[in-house]
Image 1 (cartoon, rainbow, N blue to C red):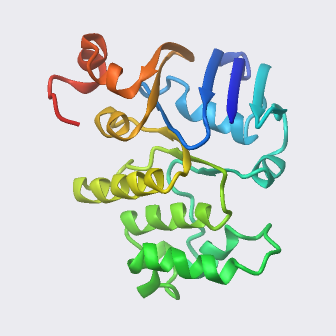
Image 2 (cartoon, rainbow, N blue to C red):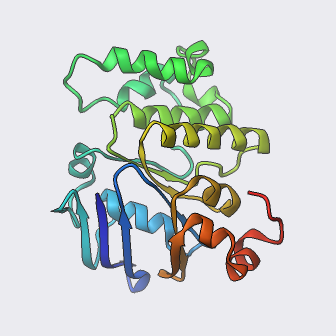
Length: 237
């Protein structure tokens, strides 16, 4: 479904991605792990069109999309939940959710909205509340719900557990596991490598803008170097 080939992205003279190669198959969950500044978010932003690559290829369903504007990429069904959630605080929860469907012209928007409320009852209870008054966990649910309203073919999650309490992190990853069980194709950027590798099928390790390891998530969870660098010494995800 998604293929990155020798992808390079820079911030001015600073190289952020240096020859990224990545393959994501439909229905799978791929995790990108690595330290701060490794290039994880830059990878997602380059795929989604928020950043323009210096060179290399981004192909989605066999179509070259590198360099496309973000709105064109979204129209293909590539939808990103950004780091920090970036909900529109003055608008209500329901208005934020409906913004996720702003490009849609079908008649199922209200049906999908009802489905989001069924999935996230706390959002249903607060649907007319200003989004900025919601807790961090509620805002993360809102950001995911807003993305789902676009009916994504590929859902990209950028640091979904960032800044959340442990109980809320567990709830967020239960949501991710449920999306996986329903066949949603996911590209997950996450500093909590335990959680990321527990839910992913395949993982890539980024260091200084380069992929230094890749393989099945199970293989990486059992690799002593990965355990030492990213997982500590706990055997549990």
